[in-house]
Image (cartoon, rainbow, N blue to C red; front, side, top):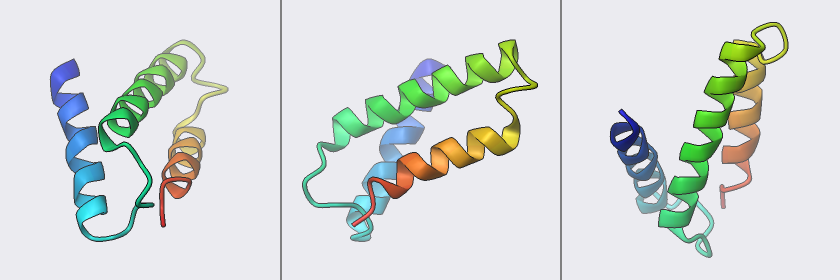
Length: 71
């Protein structure tokens, strides 16, 4: 499952990079690992503290992270 999530992150970022949506200075492999780690952590937090780490909060955090990668 972890490999699949890592591949999904990598494919997402590669697709965004190919479309010109991402900043040119990004190390895509590092960013894929960073996104994977963020999703892992958010999943754990949502499981342990669902009242604090809500689905809306997870979307907000992921959205902000991805916005920081855009060109």
